[in-house]
Amino acid sequence: MKKLCLLVLCLALLLTGCGSGREAERQQQLAEELRARRDLRFTADVRAEYPDKTVSYRLSYEEDEEGCTIRVAEPEAIGGVSVHLGPDGAQLRFEEISLDTGPLDRYGLSPLSALPALTRALREGHLESAWTEGELSVWELIAGDHLTVQVWLDAELTPQRAELISDGRVSVFLELSDWNAVSS
Image (cartoon, rainbow, N blue to C red; front, side, top):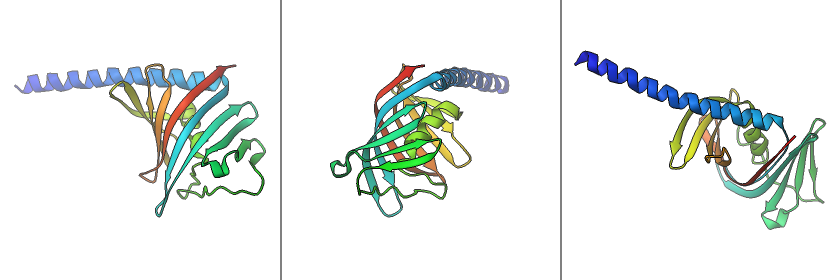
């Protein structure tokens, strides 16, 4: 009986290792593909959870060799506000309107920085664990000492949604659409 239990345990470990190995290969494939790309675009419905409030935005993300631009689509009152993040820093663009995007944690995570943090995690993050939920693969990526990103991907490795976890708390929820990466 003891040998049978040991055999079952070893088989279970081997099978989980095979699945994790496959997901690690898929994660490396996506990371390499994204590192080789010069242009990336997507839309995100962003919900950020502050200790005392919740804020929601619809943002578009556009990346090229000069950096990335994040545009507000909703709420309509501030639609068109954009931030360009490039080698020379950040630049907010739009008349006199300001966008409440204060930090969610002590490391500077904000609703606007969540999209670049997601793309950085997909390119450079370490795959900590992987599992499936229905038709989607879920990857838990370690994006730094303080940030973990869980991302749900379809069979073609297109991100569908993500959660950014900082200080052990989910701070930002992303619903992704219109994922479009163009090869270099």
